Image (cartoon, rainbow over all chains, first blue to last red; front, side):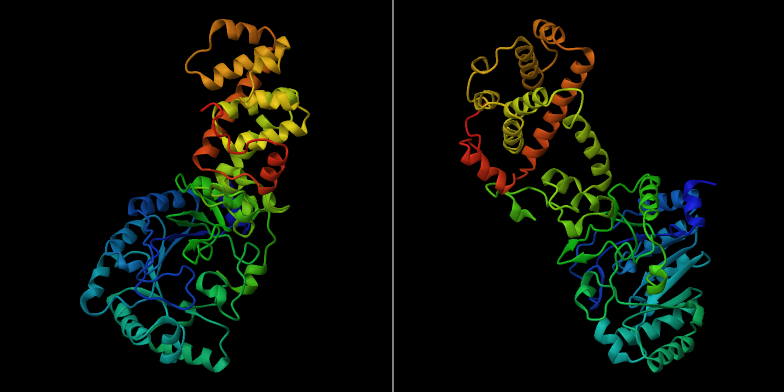
Length: 275
Length: 201
């Protein structure tokens, strides 16, 4: 067994690796980790690099790849790239779900038949509360898109980000996602993390190396500790959780992450559910 | 963090502050400001992990005397007009006991012959001037004089030291790394020109 597989088996690092495909976004969410917006620098990852690193990840023993942003589907070439990546390992792609209006959904056709899951953000069953954080019309666009995506044959998950909801709010959200065709096992609830725009939100939780599960994350700025790590604050990329600037060959940041991870206490990330 | 530095010229890259230090470099910031070399290398953690032990080995304690090492570092830095390194190592030279005339000679403010007469040191300084200030091979008479005074392992170490200093000189000069404000104050109180205007220009 390789050192990488041993590190995964022992739980020192995640079996999943992430890419930040880009940093720009059509939305400007109040808690965004990366200060993404239509005005944010794109900082896109080259698709050939993403495909190459995914193949390397599979060879090293990673079992899944995640792709996040920014709004990932602002890049019209992404569906075909995801399809190719998924030939190495299953892929999960995060999206705000607002771009699939009308026949734009057809642009996702290259993904059909591949092991690709789409994770769409939906924070509340209350449209006003949801849109307060994510922007006008967000709720309406998302609840319109999810059933159509499922009907078209895509696997869809829902991620809800926010401060711990009361039981009634949580239940209302679950009733909503079930009504949209999303089973409970495909609903993820995440806290607001005290990084990026979330750094100034009351009730957000700290997210340093002691709280975040080591989950290698590749960006245009290098390799980071976790998808919660390559954050942006006041237009500056945070470097406190930077693992290396080198991303290719992938073995270099992987080995550095393992070395760093094996020197840290374990367990607290599970309590915080920051995965 | 930059407030600790002398701001006659500002660094051309951001110097990483302690709260932004990458995980692998945090220990270097634990006792305060690690200096602009480390704070800039921390932009590239994997480079820092390699460069710091390399520089530490070459510039730090070794089989060579501290005096020989400072002759090599300060003279090379002066020849390269590296303000950051000359200021930093003028202070080191003072601390390790070089005389003011020796320091000023190494900095180019006095003829070397006025401060250095020992055969070994003269041979070393001619070697430094040829390696740091020249191009191509070193003249045979300079090499013979130098290798006649030093064992092979010392020749290797001193020449690596000159080479590493050249690398650091160009790095620090190009990026305009700032000296600490306290260091500049001290050197100015001692009467040294911290701007190096005219030296080897």
